[in-house]
Length: 327
Figure 1 (spheres, rainbow, N blue to C red):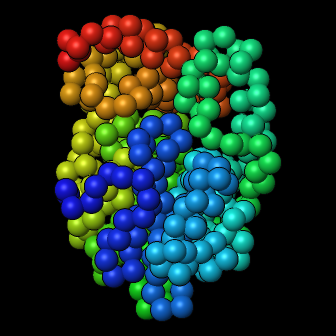
Figure 2: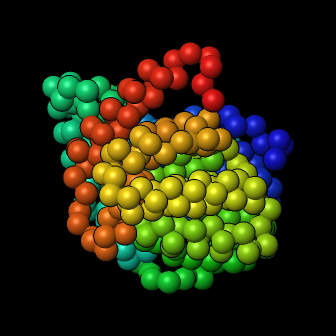
């Protein structure tokens, strides 16, 4: 896959298909896509704030003639702000999301994130962690433009003469994850079903839906896979994410059955080759979500508690892995 460098900006996949990448792919640094045919264009996701989204749309306009006012359709692959908070800048587009995805967008609106970041300096270690991961973004004054059309299951669309298929695979990463498949070009945009080179995070689960989503992608005739975070990949990248999820599920299950609390289990699981990925602290949320799944409960997670546990994990991890000897 070396023909696409992992550099910030617009990457031409060919035949009117583009990926917009934001290294490093860590917290909030997400990817988007653009599909153009004839008079029509489809944007796949916006970015975490209006500054980044405006910059992206300007880059797209310069390269392709399609800017924010020209996009005919916007797909939000899921509810997270790093894929939706720039929606207002795509002012004329029909915005499509899965029904579950659209409903979830109301749960953490931009003003709530802005308020959280204003409070972060007074929140001890958790606040430090939040500032470390989110201080590069500008949340003030964002108004979220919500989807104007929703679907469940699958939805077949056209961009000019190109067929585009939306496939709902959530709940997995979030409650309403959607894949965007362009069959004739053998390209798929996966949203956060794939984090490449970064640790996936299970906000919703069940994990079996996520594994099934990976298997679905592996079964499609696709050559180019554009993840929600990280470099453009192919099926090898899909297999790695699948391997991580299957491994953590297997390891968490053993510890759950042995009666180990979730935080302890998260610290106890050896990350092996996955330890090289960024954001290893997400294992805390993953084990928490898996435990919830094993218990058959669907309670709403206490987000601040999870962020504080991730902050602790990251601190310990950095401490242990400060030397060049880390595996």
